[in-house]
Length: 275
Image (tube, rainbow, N blue to C red; front, side):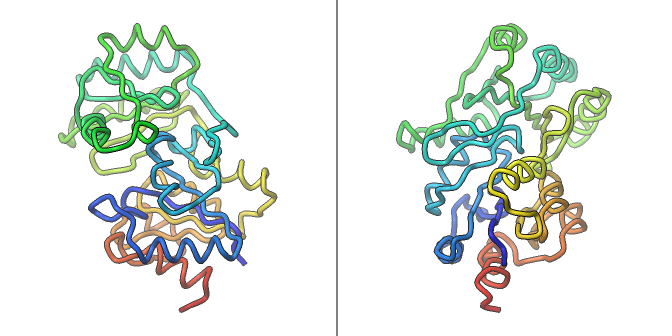
């Protein structure tokens, strides 16, 4: 019997309209009624992930920033965190500036950026329609290097975004020369930089120890490169039909796409034994 289901957000639990379908909510509710822990496991910052944890009624911890931090859903207490050293964050910042690419930084619950664009602009617009407690804190800074120096030990990850595949690939190649970091992509137009060893799979391992749930009793559902470590750790890795090839290759099962209630179909089959 599976006792924990870790679910990615974008491209997985959320449909293309960034909403959770009624069928997904119902399947998750029934799984929780059986005592199964449902853990949101996202590249998003805690506040951005918590919004959807609320919508499904999960009271379990949230894995945010690709595993760099695990936070209690109800009170926001930090269970585990892996922050970048200042020297490492300055190296990453230098490469971003050198390549002239857009990037933002997650520092605690705050998104830092030198200009609103891509993800930060989307969050900025979305914040206008959310209650204060659900808004992602966005700070536009004049000089990222100086800002990083003023908040040592607060950086969880960098997100680099570009609609130019060549620029993105070139920047990633430069970033991969750094031995202190791990790099993962969560969408075709981005990659994310975290401390070496940080991953969703590593975060699942932390929860496994805390709750004494062995990996073979865990299900992980995702769609992209940053979900592969979850698939490798959990007993059952499930990729979305809309997922990237690298995710599908690592998964043991392929469910329907995110616009076709793929999460619900997976939970119904493997947790609720409906199919």
